[in-house]
Image 1: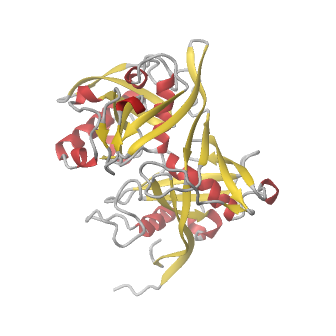
Image 2 (image 1 turned 90 degrees about the horizontal axis):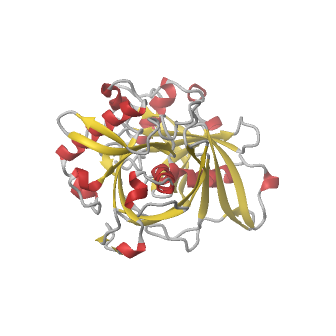
Image 3 (image 1 turned 180 degrees about the vertical axis):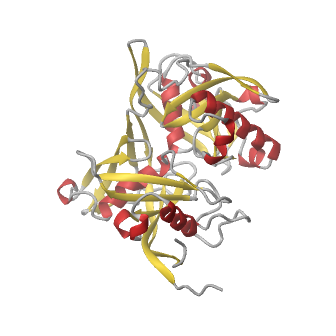
Length: 395
């Protein structure tokens, strides 16, 4: 029987967008966890409370959903002309696995706030009152993100009247710019890994589907709701209580990942659950959101439902919103067609919790589509700060 005392690690529990996560300053982690590897993964798993065969994460900080089983490690940036390095770890709930393959767009909204409050941003950049522009290097995807954080009396302003569907209370608005959000590739077709805005994807024993495969924000497989037998207005219970449907989505996701070149064989998908995402779209429709709020077709450009870590997301992942905005801006994609077609600079889409607006600046250069940036607004708030405790023999 182990009687090893617990150790405590400085940490901050934050909400960013429609997600929550445990934030660490890299230098506060035990020395063994300040570099990538087994010790770091073991510590984060124990902090969050995974793996949990009960699926509840009762013995940790996780909230038993993909939106709340998240960790962030921040440090002063090693990149020139950047303020902070942002590393995101998506912690599996029922398996001993931390996925480092992608970014969390929602928690990005909290990165600037944490960086300012924890001395990772130079004091001369922080106004007494106004907006502090924080330049973030997203380590997982090697991209630049700009966060515009409101400052009042020299401190991060967290309260305000900005409302975000999927979050109960209003807060201060944080505008996020994802610069050059598409994947970088020498062949010029990296945003669309096959070179096409629409492909056919054949999935054994399930069927053949039209898909848009895009690397922007996060690798995403877009499908038409009608091809899957859905309206596009479904809520979480409709999908997440259907074991057969979830297995079908995972199989489609695995075959889509192979077609995108993300993995070589479908069996590898189980070790890469964070990417790619899978989503389905439809033309605007009336529906009632999960909060009981009515969403009217004339208020939105399209509906989108997306899955994260094997379950339908309760709102929309921030990185998937970037993919939606980018795909909507490019004529001919399934997202663009669902929103009415043509060139667009922004769209408002309906998701299970309500609506969200996202903009993207797309242009065609040498017959290839590129996107300079995608923009959206989120909010963030510190929920608790202090220390997390884990058994000393965790790592």
